Length: 240
Image (tube, rainbow, N blue to C red; front, top):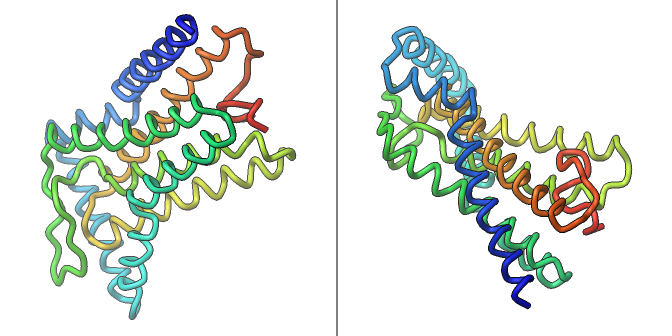
């Protein structure tokens, strides 16, 4: 019993440390963070021009901004949080409590990291004429984009053990990427985020999942289980 508890504690420590390490050293996110914090003029000019372009295009199509407003909330942070909790319950019932913990830790870490970075950077949101949407809080990084990247990739990693064919696995990743890109685009098109906000959010979201998946795989190997490649086989291949 003591060994089991010690193993669980080691898993929790690895999940936490891996999350912090990968999130902090994710190259795309760190580069954008530095540029935003330094008010890098070329980036600001690019963000402004892209915001006006995407927002103007969305306004030019009747009813399109209404569609984007609904869709961006359907795929919003709370959707992924609920799905993560439901997945955790399902995993726990199936007899995979540590995998359930991984799901909850991953989505929670993603949300807390996003809040922390928003407070740290405190970037203003775009101010565009005739606004069609509003969002609270700071702008960098995008919470919707980060949650979509975290949620979709996490769910794919949970489902991969159940997908037998390589083509099906590639399709699952393609759907995850498509949903993430759409959410990121919708935030810019609605005029509530800069392009660099959503790119940073996606990078940090994927980094968070990569970190916790790496931590989980390290634990699996310490437990004597066969090595696995998470993005090909999922975080727990035996869950099939």
